[in-house]
Length: 117
Length: 115
Image (tube, rainbow over all chains, first blue to last red):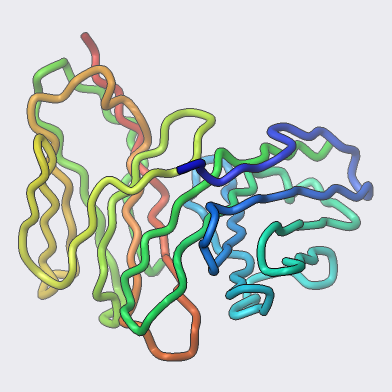
């Protein structure tokens, strides 16, 4: 089974520029997550999709971050305009559809390392 | 006080040592407790998960949960250089039916096992 794919792996931009990240989840996984991991911190959830609908975006800075998951498969996360504090690794994860049980293993991609200068 | 506290280390041990990694938490709603391993420049991968209090063993790894103390541990026996990584604890409350499964992670402990 192929894992979660992400691209690009690395990105360097100037502040105030825009950037987009792409994620392809594991085939058949209905739930997709985007996390932000700042150096020395644990991942923080930005947004969760169930199929192509948003389940939780309470921690997404909506003035500059946006995400979409068209057709319930691939997803893109965009930052516009970027700030210095957005420098982090952006992780995508996916899991199977929830059936009422809480525990639900999330499989992570390798992440995109963003540096904002 | 953060919901999940984890000593970031770094922790350096000789090969063959027993390693103890710990997290404390404040949210009583947490019911699922996970340990993830993250190698440098990779995404986290699930190592073990436990539900509620008790111990769970998988090979050289033992996860322990003490809900009365709000304290979880991961023990690694006969540590190997290949165990060198950052270990993240993560926790999740019981599914509320609202559709959101928010994992709360600790900061991670960076472990180095020296040959």
